[in-house]
Amino acid sequence: MRYVSFVDEPTMAPDDFFMTEAIKEAKLALSLDEVPIGAIIVSNGKIIGRGHNLTEKLNDVTAHAEMQAFTAAANYLGGKYLKDCTLYVTIEPCVMCAGASYWTQISRIVYGAPDVQRGFRRINHNILHPKTEIIGGIKELECGSLVKDFFLSKRNKT
Amino acid sequence: MRYVSFVDEPTMAPDDFFMTEAIKEAKLALSLDEVPIGAIIVSNGKIIGRGHNLTEKLNDVTAHAEMQAFTAAANYLGGKYLKDCTLYVTIEPCVMCAGASYWTQISRIVYGAPDVQRGFRRINHNILHPKTEIIGGIKELECGSLVKDFFLSKRNKT
Image (cartoon, rainbow over all chains, first blue to last red; front, side, top):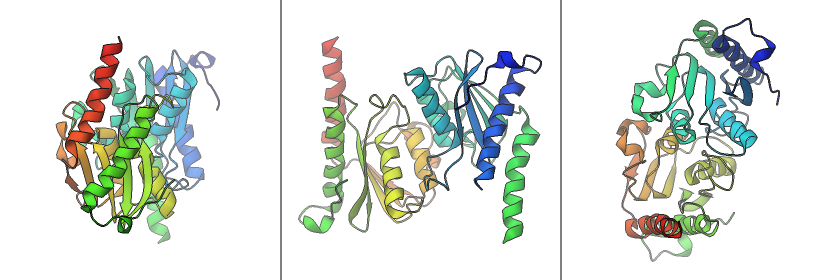
């Protein structure tokens, strides 16, 4: 795992900088022909967990980018709570991942593009831990296009 | 992993039989000083996945009994969908696990005791896949007592 610190590139806004790192993870998923979604966990300006969607490769619906980033970050910290951390994820988390974020007590979730069909917000905002702040729309176009183009290319192949 | 078939013990009602197997998993968690919750996945009368809560041991909030059972069952089947399967779990699933069950498209969820504080039903019933049938209250007292007694013993120690 590469640990990248924000101090290495202080000319970008932090949320843009870290979303760019999440997009790199999404592109790793794309290179494996997975739905291109990527996630990172940041603590004190440092990336402490990374993940990209691997549901096809692992034959496992639980292998979402966020779930792997949570596990990696907890492993890095040596504790299961991510109280002073931020999750950056290219697409709005699903119910499973939002439910997992509840258990981590993560401070902040920043997502790129909304997921109208499968995003957790279609159910109920109260899925998140009351201490978790959420914002969306960071690099929305780029994050959303990756997924849209992926499904478009799949449809064109069939 | 032990694969148990219902045909070995046809004198019990199937749901009671399989919940007893989930309780065995919960007791394994208890033996590791974990919150005692257990789960199994059944396909055609056969147990194809087992799991027990390991969140403390693995330092990982995603290591719920159900998540591990889903992963084990998908691994057994060689595909990520559990369309003709039943999840037996000793306690009502949380939002994360119910969200994961959505992705598996599992046919049926049978739980033991309700979880009023953290169960998925406190949020919204629509978390489950529309094809998933849910029933609760199978061996409710035994399933619930395991968790209640665990927390009681923890409180008495402090």
